[in-house]
Length: 190
Image 1 (cartoon, rainbow, N blue to C red):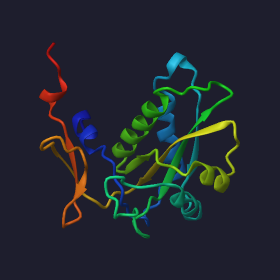
Image 2: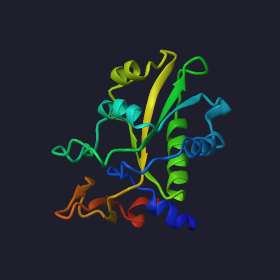
Image 3: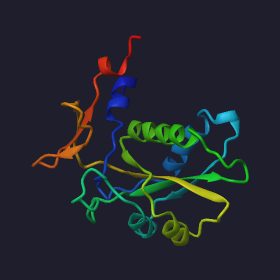
């Protein structure tokens, strides 16, 4: 797949084939891509937790919140939940400020996942205290992002924004629509 197609397919997927298991080595490979990415001052303060066993995924799921623009949707139903998670942590013994590193790492991992036929969702709405307790994450690690991964079972459509409404939505066929500003609107000519 060429780069344009890869970026276009790298959407936030929120429904998966939960029976499709993701191999630990593949998840490790995705983190390897993030390891090679840019890091502010080359500090490399990010650490990662990998979970791909159903019993671990069941602990993580209730610690996440899904699709803020869909208030009547509590998240994926059983059978459509993520098959794996990568949790991005910041090691506070290296730095107290993680800047843009988590975003760079998360996008790199997601691009790698799409290249492998997977999809995912970057989740920043996290019940951090509950997650820390469930997974016994030491206090030296700040919980930054949860990446939910799996084999997508939903269709996501990108469309131009109508008016100023940036809210994504689902139609009667459960197709997920994501409005994007046009390129002409993004590029300023000062």
